[in-house]
Image (tube, rainbow, N blue to C red):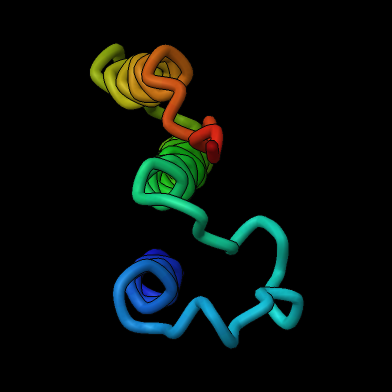
Length: 95
């Protein structure tokens, strides 16, 4: 999924002819107006994958949980906060 989003974003930003592409045949969340938006979408997908991996680890090891497992959710929260503070999803104001 991450590779698909990255490939479509790179195609939209650098290869496609924007003069003839209206972008209406693409889902709204995958449209790529700038490189910051592409970075934001990829980072969000990575945070979601890490969260699912954490849930998988917890459910597999539900009987013998250790304190070391807490590192993964802390890193997920730090990544999400860093993503929030970067504000990469803001579109540039066109003049």
